[in-house]
Length: 306
Image (cartoon, rainbow, N blue to C red):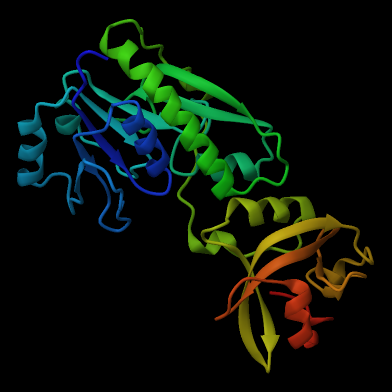
């Protein structure tokens, strides 16, 4: 590009970091990076980084206006920008969203794709308005989910890199007037909600397939977890990897019951089938294979997890 656009970037890790690297490699490094004080983005680049407590802060708004930016770019920032902020850049504000809009608007599109067992997802670049993920679409790109065991962390990285590459292609065309925004089909919009810690608590009466998806979707946060009794005290355990296996019995009174597999791993009966837990994290300890966990905690066999 002959004239490099002056870009201000709004985002939080870990989703934003790969995108910033791709922009920088394409000589589109943002002049300023806006990130959250709760989730600081420690990105080593030539860009300045600001962590405003409040977006309405007058000093912060003056700083944005003084830059006279061409474009704002948002990637998983987590806050809705006011019209006052959206009106600052000459060419508007682009949002790179990790779903094929209008599907999965909102804060948890990646987790939702895994939880629902989707075979396809993607990224969308839209022109931001005052509503959540509502603006007209400039570009999108589909991604086939070919790995049935993909975790949130893996899919997030893949979509971030895909989105960064799409931004590099889209920004010059948008600035030169080659793209006509296309309004979303709002009647087909679906919405996601913010994931909370309690979402990670496993309900063992659900089918093994559903629980296995939760383990992958909630890795790394909040973690899919359950409780067991050790020395008559409740202990939390977080599950990181599991495989669907046949249950030893179809007795529904055994839902949540722990048994040992032939290869010495821990497994749990669910409402339909069973899950062999391959990797877990006991409370206060590091991740470990369940075969190693059982060597010091054999009393868990036969317990019913909460």
